Image (cartoon, rainbow, N blue to C red; front, side, top):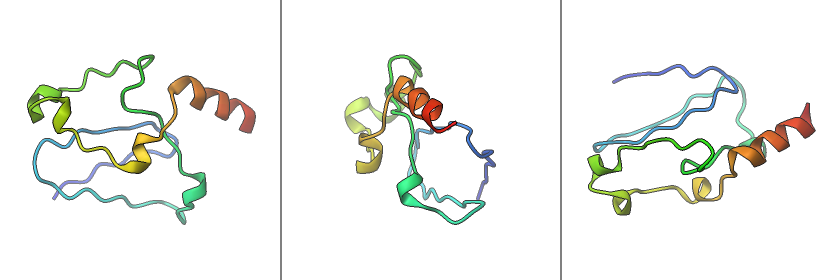
Length: 83
């Protein structure tokens, strides 16, 4: 078993390369209505995901929640309004 600490408000993403169980632990009570994120395939961020390691992008499994995430530009605009 491995753990990774990600500080609050730190953007993060991952590509699981083999059968795995991934779970989260929050520092506070989780409120789904406040949960948000940035689309993994946002062209402004341009992450070079190693999809060839999983046999191509067609083998990618993305949760329904993550399919609806916003662009980085939209995320920055949302953050501006809240600060």
